[in-house]
Image (cartoon, rainbow over all chains, first blue to last red; front, side, top):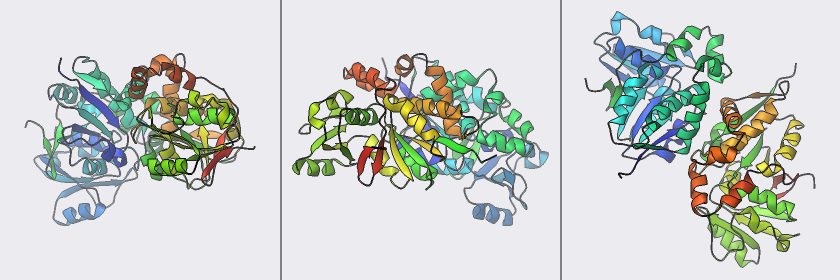
Length: 241
Length: 241
């Protein structure tokens, strides 16, 4: 019997070095809202995205004439074209464009995982397509939660649990690390009503106070797209375009 | 209404700097088996323990004539007096002694948290006493899981969840960070049979293969002692002795 592939979850970009294996596929997760927004942007026809960790880089690209999304602490930064609400990317003007994005947590996680074999973008909005693809890759999978300023957060963990659950259902193919086991237990108890489950979580509370419940519901919706964004050098592009 | 105190969980000693607050009480957790063993040692009359992170330090103390416990990867190291099985500390010879201990994960976590306001040792075996004390301290509580080589592990998380659950039942006193919320959800779903729940976890599997099921059951038993070990300089001593 061939050795089973490992599915595990890393709960913070800061912890990534402890989990790094050069042959693994890393799925970067920032459900509220960076990776959800990225999936939306590709669904609405963006050609490439450039994720950048710092606002300085974002500003530099803006000066060069790029469309740029920039968010910190849940708020879109003035002078840029988008924040990280998925709705802000539902526009004709991104079609065929290369756009830049910098967010509080998600783009930092992409940066942390750059040395992985392959880095792809995951969200509830592309989950089925993502899992179907992961099942065919014959590689260990690390689900990297962006968290909140390098701390654990609940919404990224639930998504990691949902993916773990789907992959681990392939008993002959995958086995779980402790992180995937815990995330999957959590997802199982939350799945009837993830929105309600997340109500007490810190970031959901933060966004609700900002009047962004609409965004949260969107980000918890399955399968709005079948596109999987993948990191290719400094760009995110569509996988298998 | 006074501001509520925060209970949160840090899932790896490596992540501790992200959670450090100088005024918090940190509970160090290494259920299988370092912190369980420490509680046992105090229950059996040890006077002080010196937790050391490196085997070099442990060896140095051994040369000086101390009784020393040393474990790496679940195995007691030859030439020392104890491993980290709680049973190995159930002996008359530790009574009134100062003994030294170095383990794979637990002593590293103590080292990581040294700058906290206060560092105490938690295990299922002293949980009620620990929680009763925490409720009276009027301080934020950080539950620091030792994990496994800086990765997340399930058994420490379950214990962190059990403590979170007990503290958060004091609605007017404590509120939860996301880590405590997740750990508490996990504990709630595991509490009917934690042993069964942990069966698939990596370290439980590792110890079971070593024939240490007896140890695991001991370490999941509530309230074998009412002693809370506390860090005092380089020593662990009994709180309120």
